Length: 215
Ligand SMILES: N[C@@H](CCC(=O)N[C@@H](CS)C(=O)NCC(=O)O)C(=O)O
Image (tube, rainbow, N blue to C red; front, side):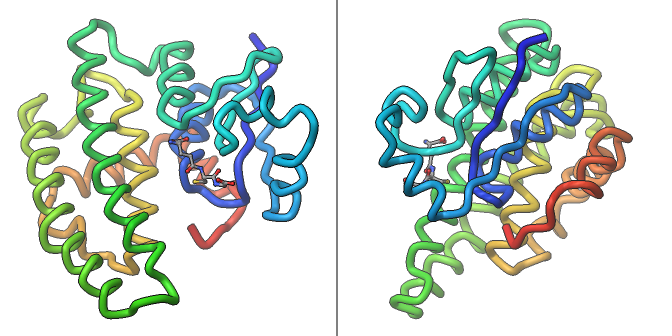
């Protein structure tokens, strides 16, 4: 097994789907968390372009090989640990879920950057997220989940995959950043899936043990 190091800020954010993949697989890794000032000096270090190809985090080191981009990292780990579906069609379905979640993340990030600035525009962005983006995407995901074993199992196939883990990580994030518990309420199958994933023993253990962060 390679020696894995996952580098990110002291938050769940874009690293948490990969952390959940590690947890689900029961694989050890070094969970390196930088404070903003440490990150600044990392970025200014002589080897920054090798260690951080895009000048951003998260970054994974696997036996010294550097992999950047959060989705690439999560997919790589899921493939390595058998959480990436069995067929190319399974993989495409997992990507559908992950990419749809990224569309929500884009809207939330846009809203987040208005924080402390134009409060009216921020409220407008939040409203759009809550009344349009999330309901549209969650309706499609609820339908997709329901079409697989009645929605009482997992998004794809008969076992846990990156799709379920990414959904669980992203919904925590949405709920915290939007300060809104209600986004899932209209979607009973998605709500139950999230609980099922959070109750998986390895995931439960990680959620209890992980550093408590604001987001
Ligand atoms: N597309 C990239 C985006 C990465 C990204 O935006 N990283 C932010 C944190 S979430 C970052 O490193 N910000 C610090 C900086 O740009 O200096 C991914 O998914 O990994």
